[in-house]
Each structure stands twice: as C-alpha cells, then as structure tokens.
Image 1: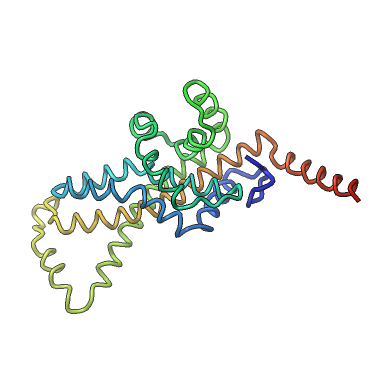
Image 2 (image 1 turned 180 degrees about the horizontal axis):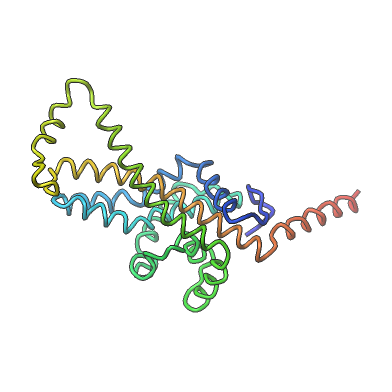
Length: 258
C-alpha cells in the first residue's frame, strides 16, 4: 500500500465526514460499482427467484441476507481505486467466486447481523486478518465512529424499503396508457377481507423493486463503511503526517539534486 498514490485526501476527519468520503468514492465510479454489485448478485438472485418462485418474499429476504457478496466486490473496486489502481474486468470476475464462498460461515451466519460489518469487512478483506488478530483489530478500528456505522447500517435498510416503494410507484405510474388493464385486474382480484392473501404478481413486482433499491443503498453503505475505516486508520496511524513527511523528503531530495 503506497500512500503517495492515493486519489483522495487522507486526513483525520469527523466520523460523518469519513462516511461522506466513502460515499464520494462510490459516486465517482457509480455505474461501475453498481454493475460490479450485480455481477456478484445476479446469479444467486436468479437462482432464488427461480427456486422460490412461489414465495417471492422469502426469496427477497434471502437476497437481502446474501447482499455482502455484492458489498465485497464494491469494496474491492473502491479500495483499489483509492490507491491509484483500476481493476480490470478480468480481475473483478476472478473475485466473484471468492465473494460467494470466502469465509461463508462467518460472513453469512455468525456476523451477518453485526452493525459493524461495513467496517469490519474492510479489516477482513484488505488486511487479511483472521482469528484473534482479526477480533483485536476490529475492536481497535471500530472504537471510533461506532455510532455512525450503526446508524448507517440501520438507515441503509430503512431507506432501501422507502426507495423500493418509490420505484414501485414509478413503475405503476409509467405503465403506458391503455396497457394498465392487467395490473388493474390483478388489483381487483385482491380480496380486502383477506389483506395478507396478496396476488403473486404484486409480490413479484414488489420483490424486484426492493431488490433494485437494496442494490442502490448497499453501494453507499459499503462506501460509507470504508470511509469510516479509512478515517479511523488516519487517526490511529497518522497517515496525513506520513504523507507530509514524504512530501518534505521529496522536496529536499530535489533541492539537493539541483
């Protein structure tokens, strides 16, 4: 890791500024990050939709549960872009199987509901620590900004639910005039005396809209977690001081050479 190659200003920030830095990294490569996220999630998502076609809500829940697969590829992209690299699509494709199976039990069972996952994922993937060293490092990194990370973790899912219904409303509003008969017929078959007996077409449409919302929100939650991780390391390791000393050393070397 060469700090002199970074493409962002590394300095101690407030916790929310650190989160905003990570979101800015995602915005810089938004479409690439979004495609990468779906590169990891498309095949499992299609498998869930096909295998659980009769229960789209369960398929949606499992899709949400395995979303760290996509998060890991987004982290792979923005972390390397930060240090001046541009991962090729071949390199990203090689990461897909690892995103599916790497530390499967820890990531998808033991630590799946951990509110610190957006930060600890960076420790796990970028520093390669395991066992006791991993736990100690997570405790050190998560000591600062833990409230911000917990709020991001909670608000990310709440915003995804809100955005999913917004997308659903837009889909309904943009049905071409004269072709909304099928949708209206589906709504008419919904018995108000049995409000939980929802027609499958509605459930499937809601599931697709929610999946799209989850993909958009998870990009920025992952980026924010990485930003908090970087900010904590800047506070702990004095990256701004190190970079300042390297600039001074480079300047002195040039003066001596002349």
